[in-house]
Every structure is written in structure tokens, then in C-alpha cells.
Length: 219
Image (cartoon, rainbow, N blue to C red; front, side, top):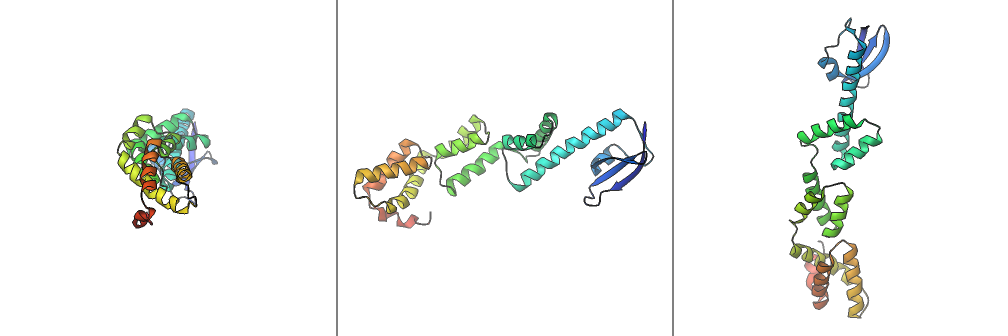
């Protein structure tokens, strides 16, 4: 049995306190843990109770770390799990934090997928194939990927490929139509567009005067 002889707020973080047992520093804990377990000066603690307190402290530490990660940038569940494992946290506390964050809607792979798809479509100008690869890399489940990408129609893909391809076409110096076709197709495939989309987009671009796409110069 050990007695709490002193409790003090940490100088650099007033949301945490230092606990002294039998006049010796024992551990630092979150203020909420102190309140939860009604810790006060002169309270006596058994070893099992101390162990429970320390487990609760680790659990809240893992959760707070996860929140800090998400506050800096959105993450998929897999990305967040990987970062917490890199910190050396126990899987049981990671699971607990993940579940709590999902309940609070701070962690949502569906919403994350929608944000990433929008970003890759509009900012990076990626095609659906490349976006799908990125989502897989982030650990998003296949059914979520398929569901979200269904919202992007083939006609929208073709039109975006035309916008992007028109700019590239202006830089191609070849007079040979076949060579232009090959280079333009290769460029769009590397941007992540499906071959069927590339074929239709290139056909439209090669068959018309590139000047028709001047209105999309800032796309």
C-alpha cells in the first residue's frame, strides 16, 4: 500500500499532474484520470489500483496522440494505425482509440475517400485508375473505393482527359498524327486514366483543332 503525499500540476501542461507516492515522484497522468479515480493527497493506493491507473493513462495518451495526428491532416484508419504502431503503442489501446474516434466521426474512411478523390480529380488531375491505386495504398477497403468512384462517370473522365490532354497537345512538336497519338495516349495513361477513356479522349483531341480548348486553359 502506498500513500499519495503530493499532487502538483505540471509546469508546461496544466492538463496533467504529477503524482508523488511516499514522498517520491511516481508518475504523471492526465487531469481527467486524476478526477476519474478520485486521487487526492493522503489517499492510499494498492499496487493493482496503481496498475489500473497507469493503463488508463496509456489509453488516454494513445487517444490524445491520435487526435493530434488527425488535427494536422486527415488520415485513413490504416494510416493512423500505422503511425500509432510506429510510436510503440499497444494494439489494445490502439483499437480502443480507433473505435472511439470512429464513434465520434473524427475517423471516417468513407469521408476521407471522398475528400481524397475530390483532391486528386481537381488538384492533381488524376484519372480514376490512379486514384484507385492511391486509395488502396491508404488502406481503404475495396467496397468503399468502388462505391465512391462509381460517382465519377466515364463521360466526366473523358472530358477531364480532354482538358488535360489539350494542354499537353499544344506542347507536342511532331507533325505526324500517329506520333502525336502515341505521346498523348502515353501521357494520359500515366495520369491514371483507363485505356478506354484515353482512346476516346485522344480521338476527340486529334480530330479537332486544339484551339477549340482555349477556354479551358486555366482548368
